[in-house]
Amino acid sequence: MFFLILLLVFIAQNTEPVAMHFLTWDWSLPTGVAYLLSAVCGAAIVVLIGVARMVQLGRAAKSKRQ
View 1: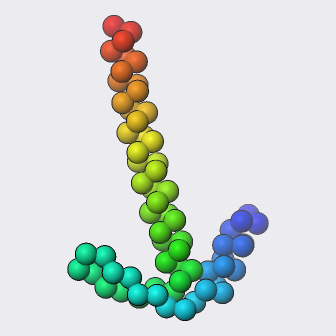
View 2: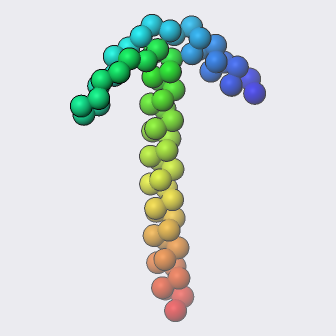
Protein backbone atom coordinates (compact mmCIF):
# COMPACT_ATOMS: atom_id res chain seq x y z
CA MET A 1 0.00 0.00 0.00
CA PHE A 2 2.83 2.37 0.91
CA PHE A 3 4.51 1.67 -2.43
CA LEU A 4 1.34 2.64 -4.32
CA ILE A 5 1.12 5.92 -2.43
CA LEU A 6 4.76 6.67 -3.30
CA LEU A 7 4.05 5.79 -6.92
CA LEU A 8 1.08 8.15 -7.06
CA VAL A 9 3.14 10.95 -5.52
CA PHE A 10 5.90 10.33 -8.07
CA ILE A 11 3.45 10.47 -10.97
CA ALA A 12 1.78 13.59 -9.58
CA GLN A 13 5.11 15.41 -9.24
CA ASN A 14 6.38 14.51 -12.71
CA THR A 15 3.84 16.16 -14.96
CA GLU A 16 6.13 17.67 -17.59
CA PRO A 17 5.12 16.31 -21.00
CA VAL A 18 7.52 14.06 -22.86
CA ALA A 19 7.26 13.26 -26.58
CA MET A 20 6.94 9.55 -27.37
CA HIS A 21 7.78 8.11 -30.80
CA PHE A 22 7.19 4.46 -31.72
CA LEU A 23 7.33 3.37 -35.35
CA THR A 24 4.90 5.78 -37.02
CA TRP A 25 3.02 6.85 -33.86
CA ASP A 26 3.77 10.11 -32.07
CA TRP A 27 2.16 11.15 -28.81
CA SER A 28 2.86 13.10 -25.64
CA LEU A 29 2.55 11.86 -22.06
CA PRO A 30 3.44 13.22 -18.62
CA THR A 31 6.89 11.98 -17.56
CA GLY A 32 5.59 9.98 -14.58
CA VAL A 33 3.03 8.18 -16.72
CA ALA A 34 5.66 7.44 -19.38
CA TYR A 35 7.96 5.89 -16.74
CA LEU A 36 5.08 3.84 -15.36
CA LEU A 37 4.03 2.67 -18.81
CA SER A 38 7.57 1.62 -19.73
CA ALA A 39 7.98 -0.26 -16.44
CA VAL A 40 4.69 -2.10 -16.94
CA CYS A 41 5.62 -3.04 -20.51
CA GLY A 42 9.04 -4.26 -19.38
CA ALA A 43 7.50 -6.35 -16.59
CA ALA A 44 4.98 -7.85 -19.03
CA ILE A 45 7.80 -8.86 -21.39
CA VAL A 46 9.72 -10.50 -18.52
CA VAL A 47 6.59 -12.40 -17.42
CA LEU A 48 5.90 -13.62 -20.96
CA ILE A 49 9.48 -14.85 -21.35
CA GLY A 50 9.28 -16.57 -17.96
CA VAL A 51 6.01 -18.29 -18.85
CA ALA A 52 7.42 -19.46 -22.18
CA ARG A 53 10.48 -20.89 -20.42
CA MET A 54 8.35 -22.68 -17.80
CA VAL A 55 6.20 -24.24 -20.53
CA GLN A 56 9.35 -25.32 -22.35
CA LEU A 57 10.79 -26.92 -19.22
CA GLY A 58 7.47 -28.59 -18.41
CA ARG A 59 7.32 -30.17 -21.86
CA ALA A 60 10.92 -31.35 -21.58
CA ALA A 61 10.26 -32.90 -18.17
CA LYS A 62 7.09 -34.60 -19.42
CA SER A 63 8.86 -36.10 -22.45
CA LYS A 64 11.75 -37.25 -20.25
CA ARG A 65 9.34 -39.13 -17.90
CA GLN A 66 7.91 -41.14 -20.79
